[in-house]
Length: 382
Image 1 (cartoon, one colour):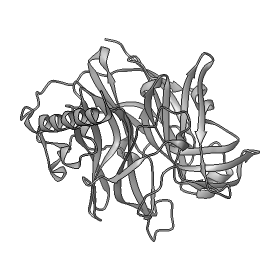
Image 2 (image 1 turned 60 degrees about the vertical axis):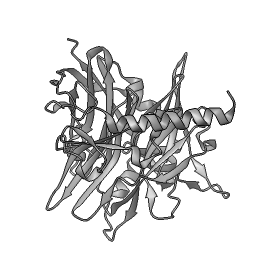
Image 3 (image 1 turned 90 degrees about the vertical axis):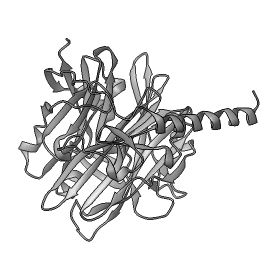
């Protein structure tokens, strides 16, 4: 089949998939959640050591993972320290807003290589930057669908607050590439486009991409609705699109009162206390989906819920673990909990979280902070 013919087939397939999204059954079937029970939760130092370096990439938060196939996993990081560690301190170091790492399975175990983009003078730069020049990207979830790698990119800008929370969301972008089969992420060519189904006001934020999953021909993008008053309350919301139509804004649908609707502003709140980052895993043999997140986005508690379908209904939260660092020092923050499919099984979850500080310079002085920290969470088999 020649290139023109392939293009026509692809166009027709995408159009049919988009049409199917519009005429699918009006209401989703309701099935009860599948139980989830923890046997034990313990540190996983072997995975911790895989990420720790003394030169170059020396710590980051975020740590989303995307299975690329062929024993390869892409790791996505947000603010990243680049420099050196000497005598337990970060020295000659600076921060870039995002980086990536590529993990490969080998006979000796997993191998992880980090990619740091640099300018003509050798200074480190972000892996991806907003084309409109406004603010920066923090990398969130990604997935491989229809032969392309898709990444959700929250766009962030500074506020007048000089503290560690002096930032706000101002946009959302969707990046994709078909070049991800190469072993040098710096050579991958991404196409970036604004994702229009997001809105940010001082009182409310709706956005998508805190977790992503491909299942049964759809790309699911889990999102959050934040209601900002005296306190910030965060709820899970959900979008999906046929895998061949992810680049078409009009093909996206949003779960609202048990139906898939075209207006993202109608998306239903599926549960509250959601984290700003998460991961959803499909445990096929157990007949369930599992979402893992930090309670309210910033807490010592790492929670999980289960569901029989990618959209729910979600069980009550189950505590997987408590991060001990939060009790050790009142300045320390624990967040960004998520599970990682390529390191997990139906009976065991590899869960990471990050320890940060309200004191920026404490992170520079104490190189034990600001790495992905891993837990081995064993689950009871039915």
